[in-house]
Length: 115
Image (tube, rainbow, N blue to C red):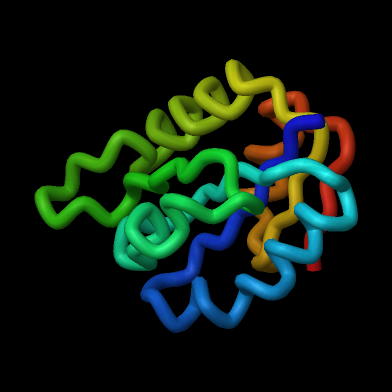
């Protein structure tokens, strides 16, 4: 089973707050998860050897040069295609954003959970 967790808030502290939930999802589903996070969370450094995390996908929207590959409408389509190619079965979105709900649906993720 391939599981995606979307935590799009800024910073290390925001990631740390959600780690117990991310680990719990992984334990409950008996599968490591993929995380979609912003680079500022430092998730690649913090979770590189974590058994509950399979992959870290960096959300490239806030590039200082303004050219992020996930920025704007075309960037949203890029993100949809990237996630679709990974064939996730479930997603957990730690945000009430309509944008990420639509992205998960368009990416073909059948089971989507969001608050």
